[in-house]
Image 1 (cartoon, helix red, strand yellow):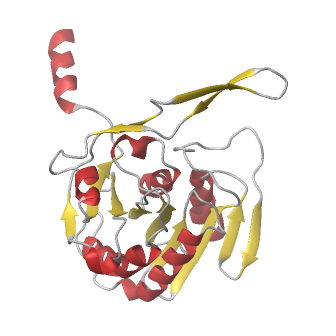
Image 2 (tube, helix red, strand yellow):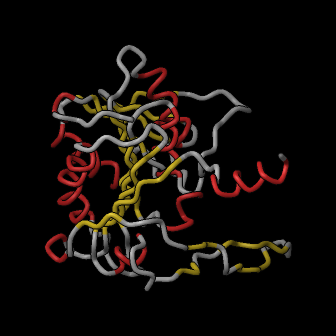
Length: 260
């Protein structure tokens, strides 16, 4: 178990994301982190890496660029950024907490398997560091409610960190697409069902060659009570503990019986 944080003001916090080091969400998250501690570092991808998942760059060398004091850009994936942040940039004193985000768009349901935001938190978890992924849900043709995440995140992070959690667990937090005063509360919910890729756009390029573009349509159940999707669509902040151990105990037990 990771022990509870009695005082986050003493914590060294590493920030990363998948939208890139210049994304508005990571600037919001840095302000949130600085409201918690003075020891805040940013190591993030040089460019947007959305839907990169938990991919690691192994076929080419990686470069680290110092953008400013305590700000470093990595020309790789979110996983690369956290790995280098922990084992290179902060090798002398490892971070006590890793915060990933704030993602432009929710990471709920099956989205978490594609998410670079969640993957950055997952990498930290595998490295033995408590980690939280944060995402701001948005609606088409509406402004992103960054102020909602900025208003609610510090208190939610403090409360989550006041409770120790398993070393193979990361926290996934999604903020609803409403102004902060309209948030209905904070709810601890399970991962719902939400699948991207049901809409495939097939067209031809200027040379007449066919291509397929994966669309944004998602098949989801927004009414299933107790899920991250239902809570966020209803205007609540959703907190979901995710486990990096994918072993299914019940099936493993059945297989052990089968194979003796």
